[in-house]
Length: 377
Image 1 (cartoon, rainbow, N blue to C red):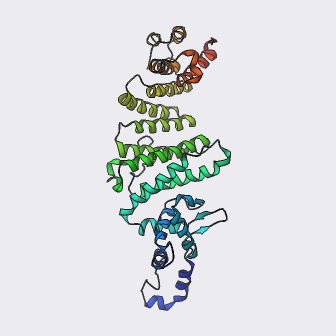
Image 2 (image 1 turned 30 degrees about the vertical axis):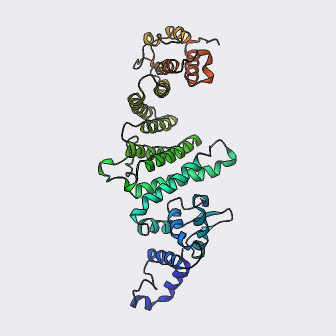
Image 3 (image 1 turned 180 degrees about the vertical axis):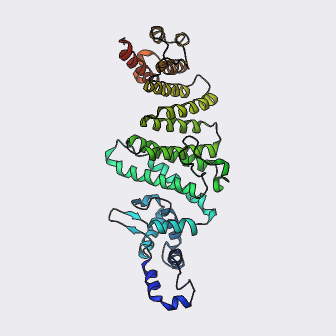
């Protein structure tokens, strides 16, 4: 908090009441922050001109553990000036902190609307690049990756707050944005929406793979979905990817009906974009088969009968399929496997080394468990 100006406020007393000149005696905390920033900007110190941009960027992320490599080199040097005026603090590890009230003042009162899409684009680009280097399984870099993911969530929230993304509709997954009341993009272009979606998807996958932050994962994937719809329309492949990722989160939570709904939305889009015989469609069929397995829906033959599946180009898979009952728990998998073998000309023996291998492994495990049949290699 800008301490030097708060001391002026305390000492002003009755003089402040008589003179309402906010240049010398700011009336409120927003005035204090503005006066501090103006003083820095008007000074002749090196990098004073970068202080405003640095401060606005710091106001977009989480309040603590702010890694300064999110800023440009000149902006990092300007942080020293911000520390002198108590606008930010920096700990021994080089991470900055900014009070939530200071952040709110900067976002709502001291950031012009014309600058907001530019700031969002800059922070999103940096965070997307940083998140691509981390994975929850890498213990050496886990904490840095987690910090970047948390900041990505804050930036996505700022994008909604500033109107770059539509506001979230609580409790409505896979259709979370209020597009009907939204007035559009805040001046951002399609590339910005693509980058926002990329950042949110990476952060969502990070949270999802942690296994303990499913709500954060869902929030980020819904932001990625809103970004894809806003930037590319309802039937773009990125929209299908977001529906799949949301379905994966619900699947991990055991919410199978919600997961199935998201997978079906993704399936419609991917059939529309890629056609029925593509690897993208096959993967969604595999996901749907996994949902039916968890639900125990063995009698529904919604996707493929065994007769259709037996026309697969893989002789081995056709032989196995003919010996199976008509059960949905594997019909999605067989549809997936059929598409994969037709697309990639895969062999059942090469299963473990290909995408079709994952599906074949699902079929094989189901066979062993439910029919006591063993597939020989």
